[in-house]
Amino acid sequence: MIFDTLERSALYSNTHPLFEKAFDFAKRLASEKVENGKYELSDGIYASVSEYFTNVTDSPVFEDHRLYIDIQILLDGKERILVCARDSAKLKTEYKPDAEFYSDASDYQTLNMAEGRFALLFPGDLHAPGLAAKTESEKVKKIVIKVPVDHK
Image (cartoon, rainbow, N blue to C red):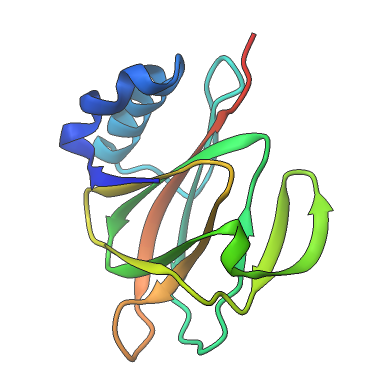
């Protein structure tokens, strides 16, 4: 898991062959007034742009992916993402392409997302995104870029 700002993303471009392309794509989307929807790039990279209200819950559900690395970038608003290791949560649903879900995490970290921040989440980084930053729900706009773990 990496948590940083989009301006510093070049620091991580060499950690995966597709990250430079993915971060360039993210910067382009973030600088434009993009509409909600799915945007495809080459090499299996795609992005989903969405607006939603953050979730106020005492029982967050964590997700994990095997085929894709998530780059989650907040464009507007504030939210929390909880992150934990796979062995600190209980499997809730069996794996279905490309996600499985967990609950009852015993040990997690909180990422306080704000405009221009990103969370880079690898397989095994269980994450519960879209959580309210405070005690009330808030409207946010976010880009989630999916980068294939394996590329040819």
